[in-house]
Length: 125
Image 1 (cartoon, one colour):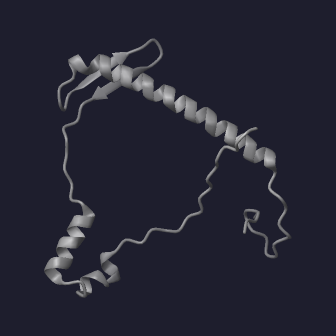
Image 2 (tube, rainbow, N blue to C red; image 1 turned 90 degrees about the vertical axis):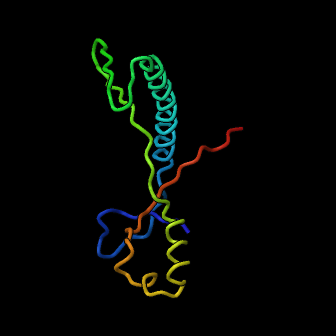
């Protein structure tokens, strides 16, 4: 079921009004433009990095100067981190599945809920 709400919510909510389709279309057009621009951005970044490769050393930076902007390219060394799923599996193996560690709320992070808007392009005829 879909509905429309107003922010801030009034004490007594009026009957939901239909969503203005032009707002959805405007959002879709904007997201399409952002997608196109993101692809161009990625291509430009990749080209700049490629051209700077000969001058890069791990931990050092290369500065590329333009007329209006400058870019700094830094090569970072590879890193490693623990895989949380592997770590949990090992803990369960060592402590047992029913150990209090796995039920104690102090051992867990709580993430706030959220509302997500997902927009998809309509198929045109």
